[in-house]
Image 1 (tube, helix red, strand yellow):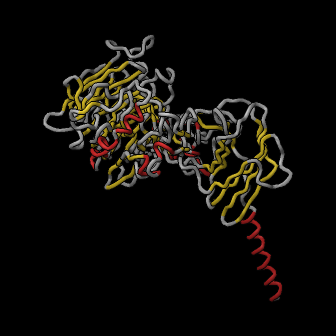
Image 2 (image 1 turned 180 degrees about the vertical axis):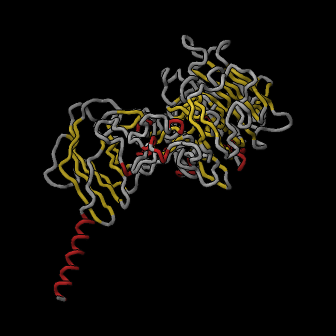
Image 3 (image 1 turned 180 degrees about the horizontal axis):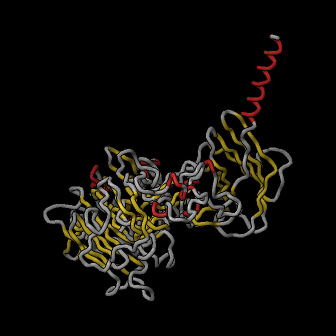
Length: 579
């Protein structure tokens, strides 16, 4: 009897061990061909993974599990927190018809797993727009907003990976469907509307619907929904209408009593929102938060003197404030790196042009400054609403804050889809052009479409805009866009008298969803006119000079001496309300 019991226990242990060891199957890699050359090979992140090894050959099959023509060990998931481990090769040239033969090894929970005899054929040179699209396993590109929406948009279900979708949080103004294992997020007004919006009918079940004396679903602000009506939104023709939380035209979000959900002209991530609701909020009390992702890239725009990276020395949360801080490239990589180094941003690069490495050539040096740029491109975008931000602008020569809204879809083309500037003030305490102050005592906000702008200014009497925190506000409707600072209106634009995009409706291109962008750049060739004087000294570069970056770097001892703790861009909170 004792022998039988021991054998039974041993057998049970063996079964448990076998189940544990064989519970993970190495997936095939999602291959993405890069331009102008190279490729990426990604596999989903799983709990317990500690290593992902990729071994490959071009047009030559493996006869054994050797290293291959190229191989590398990846020791951590992508820095973009996108739920993948990614091997990146930026050197191999691929053409249509080439076949990547590869095998993969994964270490998970201390056990090594392999999958061999895999291959991928290059069928075309199409690449997905990484800023707006998800790359399916079958090479199809779909909008990122369709990722984890409980629909098989890819056709191979690779846009619905349970390991990632199950961890996904709904943004403000949306509710997770109550069905078991249903991670779809829908607007509150779609609950109990007679339609199967959750795809499993869980939004229409009696226990989840609104009836008299029943408790209603809650949104992320804690408001109970007392009724769902398809009433039209408040008219934006009312010249006296102000979209403040306590006005009678919108829901008072400061109280927790039941409120009606009236359909708004505001959309969030492509879906309708309830009128007068808080649809987005970040106060940085508990860190940066999952709504924000880093841009990691070189630049060819006004921020060309800067490389944006994801180093925590350039962005961090401290005492409940988000801090963005520029730093010298040589301080991070070592003295002489700007003039003689090679900077490869590697797998963390987010450049849509795939320009991810740079080496000095002639007088074209590396960008002398590192900084940070954060966006909600992957988590939150909206059309029409009230945006309020409490921020303290930076002080220091040639530093320029980026408090922008950028277009989600580029519906009018990449250059014609516009940019909204919530607030901008050049950091030089004393900066003049033709005798006029244009430095840190001048605040600018407005709109930009390619080379056309509509701006509004306000001078600071007896001080600088970096002295204190200010509340910057944008009021954006389908009729006009208005800008405020500390509750004072700086100006409004309706597109009728100064159209920024010819041949379209007057408000175009500001009739599409935009996402939030926070950053800081230095110098460049668009923000500061030639001939400007900083404390009596001429600006050290000319905007059209091919040597402008090296001339800027040559004046480092002067402008860097003005940088200190006040050079940080600090943000206390950001709130967005629906109309």
